[in-house]
Amino acid sequence: MKIALVQMSMGKEISENLDKSLKYCDMAENCDLVFFPEIQLTPFFPQYHKVCVDHYCIDMDNDALVRLCRKASVPVQEKVQT
Image (cartoon, rainbow, N blue to C red; front, side, top):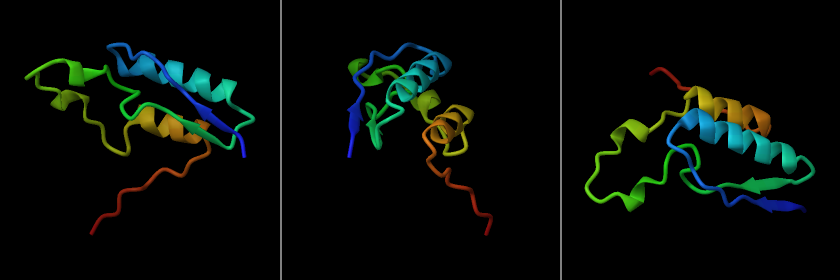
């Protein structure tokens, strides 16, 4: 099993971070698993004390997350209406 670990600096825009993430997926195309930082699509906000970061929360159907999952051949969880 081949594993890739990505350590990356995050920019302020989700689109910028998505582009970086997709490039890292390309670089790791022969790997079985690719690990990213836990908040790789958003700026690294834990460093900012008492700043509201709610706008960085993303849903499972977020376009950036869906693109990244598709690139990595990971199933995307579908919302189920009850």
